[in-house]
Structures are given as C-alpha cells and as structure tokens.
Length: 456
Image (cartoon, rainbow, N blue to C red; front, side, top):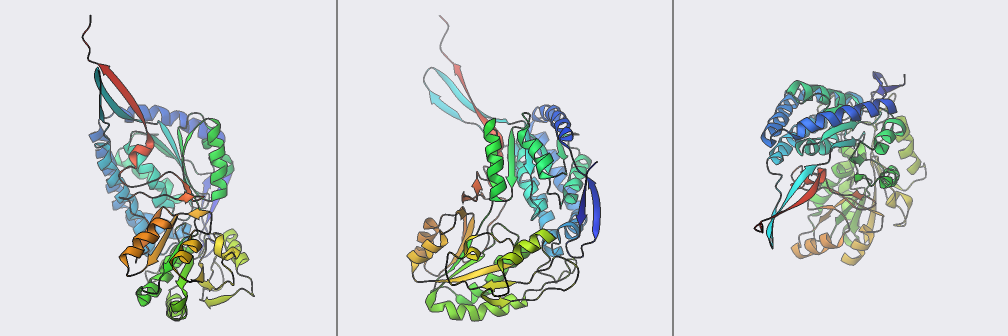
C-alpha cells in the first residue's frame, strides 16, 4: 500500500500520512460515481440547489478548520487560507443558483417546435493543483455538481487534506454517497487512471503546461472533453501617465501573493522608460516591507514555497551573479523559504523574462511606447492574465484588446472572481471556468424537434 507524506512547508514536519489511490481504486470509484450520478441528475433542480447550499453552509461552519488545514499542508498565510475556504463556500452558493437557471432555448423552425436541453455529462474528474488546493478544486466541483454530474477529485500529492475534509462535509450536508469522491494519489497513477478511464466524461486539469499537453493528448484518444488551466507569465504594464505611486505600491502583492505560486502572478513588470527609475525607487521599499514568516501569524503576507523540489526550481533561475535589483529576506533554518527577488535582465528574451518560475521572483523591463509594450507583453507562449496602469481610457481599451491574455485588469491586479469567466490564451489553457457559463461547460447540448404537422 503506497502512502503520501504530507509535510508542513514552513517546518518540514510530517503533518499526515494518506493512503494513495491505485488504478483499481479509481475504477471502483468511477463505477460508484456513475450510479450516484443517475440519481442526482434525476432530482429536481431546486432540490440539487438546496443540497449544494447546505454544503456551502457546512463549509462556512468549518471555515477556520479548513483554513488551518491549508496553513499546515500548503504553507499559506492564515489570512489567505481563510479567504480560500470562504471562496469554496461562495462558489457553492453561486453554482447552486445556476442549477435552476440552466436554460435551453426554443428555436423557430418550420413544421414544428425545436427546443434544446443541457444534459449533464456524467462523471467528471477534477485534477487540482497544490498552489490553491481548495478554490481551484471548487472551480470544477461546484458547477459540475450543480449541472447534474458526479465529481471525482484528485488533489495534488502534497495537499490532499482539505479535499478529503470537503468530501466529508458534503456527506454531512446531505449530498448522496459516492456523488463527490476524493482520490488522493500520484499523478502518474491515479491521475493517469482517471484520464484514461472510459467512464469519465470530462477532465478538468489545473497545472503545468507540459502536463496539460500530455493530458490533452490522452483525452484525444477517446475524444474526452477537457478544460485546461495551465501556466502563465503575466505582464504588469505601467505607462508613464499612470499614478506611478499607486502602481508601485500595488506591484509587490501582484507577484508575491502565495509566494509567487500563482499562474496569474504579474512576474513581468514592464515600465515605460521615462518613469523606470522613479518606479524602481518606489518599488524597493514595498518589496522589502512585505512580511514573510510564520503562516499561522495573521500579520504574515508571504509564507514558504510548497516543497524542496519547488525551492530548487526557483533557485535555479537566480544564480549568485543574477542581476538582482532587490532582494528581500526570508527565515533561515527549516522550511522551504525563498526571499522576494526583483531581477533586471539585460534582454527581454532572458529565460527569467519568458519562463514561468512559480516563485517570488519578478523581472522589470523598460519599454518605449504603446506598441513596444504590447510587443513585450505578447512575447511569451502564455496568455493567462495581466494588468495595465494608465489614466488614458482610450489607451486602456486599446492595450486591453491588443494583449493576448484571457483576464486583464486596468489599474488593478484582480484576476479571478467566481462570477466572471476565467481562462487563458495560447499555452495558458483551453476553455473557461467560473462565471455565468460555468455550468454549461459540464453539459452537452441536445437538440429536439417535435413535429406539429397534422397526421394524414
């Protein structure tokens, strides 16, 4: 029997040992889920909505417990972890409202009545990442359940505890047994078994672009539906006409939140050349003031990286002779700590400027004009998110349309709301999650024509 060892990233202490799911476990879970799904889809939409709202209430009642689990298994600051647990609650509430509004359409045709229906897919597998274990699991789980599907959730190997607790709360709230199951395990075992299983109708995957490509290729064999939320190297574009003080003050949080382990992190800061020096002067105190420390302390803004593997990956991008303009501080001793770092590479094609580091490291590059800013912003294969800072409304609209990214903010770094669609361009993914159309992504459209011609 294989086990997963969950470590506290801040201390490297063992938090829990969890039995890893095998391919046989996955097969059995799919069989049980398929049976549960048929009963769930047969419920009145209002009844499904009522049970999902009960689930949301259960999450809210155990919000602190879930947040503390997140602190221990993922190293997230407690303030962030509380928000993440609250986001699961809010997603369940939002999705529940959609269960009774999953409307088809009536299309005028000759000789009869034509209507469409949104039919649930069946069994959906959600393969969640370790960087935001609770919210991203709920991005797939909540709308899939609301649309009448069963859900099998495979959490990341390092962060299975909140997922397991959510499954317990779902049962306590009254959701049918086997409708929402959690399958902790290795990606190469449990993940591959889900992707290749003929009884799984759709895969929802969040993770690296390299793994996403492999999953997409495997899904193509059986034309399995897939939604992919993959990597990013998001730009933060600061024009000379912007409020430079505000832009500099907001920048540290845009790439240091969650220790930079965020596909939407604004790790490429593009600053118009004539205000570059002033921006750098203002940026440094903000980066140095970002509080790094014990994730359980409410004052902490940045915790450790998730693992020793991730720590070594980040270090590999910042050798001793790296062009570091700003280096923050991090705790010494046990834990996977890395300081906030700002680099100023000599060329925009430096690997630190185009590859996803997934740590608290940003690069700052100057640009000349609007066209140059757009060129640099689009100079990666990714296109997930980004920000631009300007007082010119016309420029804000022009640049927003020109930057190839799925989620942009003007004079803000907000990327994700459960009420608006989220997804990427290019190698940042395929499909959209969240927003008003979230439930339809877990359905097939069925067209039905009913003849109204008289019998002869």
